[in-house]
Length: 186
Image (cartoon, rainbow, N blue to C red):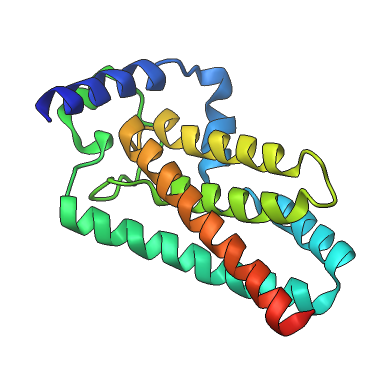
């Protein structure tokens, strides 16, 4: 386990130090939770355009439940494992810390889990009408997830775990949405 943690630290420093001041503004923007509001507005429009209001309402309610689920599960993991974030460790002086607020614990990344859950959920729904919706959404989730390493908030292991858990939750909610629409809305 100690070797795995050391490898995670080394990989963090490598990925974190790939950054440059020229691109710092972009990654700080991407990691902000309100940065994706224009994307959410477009996704909401596409859902409404293709589904109508009832299925869109079901989809949005499930999104709220899914994001709550990923966020709360991340908090449970953080409280249980109590793994300090890289920005709390002395070795961060060898890396780059771009945000003032650090937070206490980091395992696993709620940003990575939530963005991946949303990508899998909505990507699977929208691929019916838009061929590359799932690929595009996963690409967006990877960018958001990497931003957490770039700004110094999470180890790669935190991000990968968050993406895996988020992917599972997103797929479960997608299946739940399909069931609800078939059984109660269609």
